Length: 128
Image 1 (cartoon, rainbow, N blue to C red):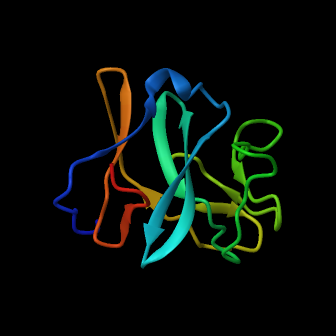
Image 2 (cartoon, rainbow, N blue to C red):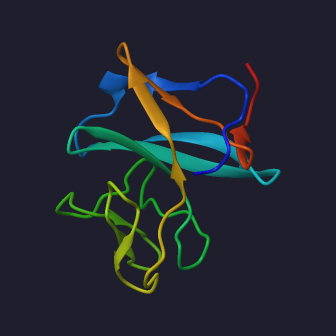
């Protein structure tokens, strides 16, 4: 796991904003000094977050803002390449990404709120 940043957790959204297998909450981060979109969604009761970058070619994956899951709501799917990822692990299961995986962003959920963990490589896009 990447070394944690000494800054506090970053509030992402209310827990209720992440409906089971529903629309994702998108947010901005800085990764290696470049702005990158990220997203969080709930799957099997667990809040998970990833950079919005396909492992095959680094392009944003949502087919509409916040829509990442396939028609059956089973996999995270890249709208460009058709790559499918297991939502809880980010591992590619179908498509040109082969054995790749999405870049995970660690989350903490407590007291009805979801927070993300900055790391040395992934920082908040805007300081509060």
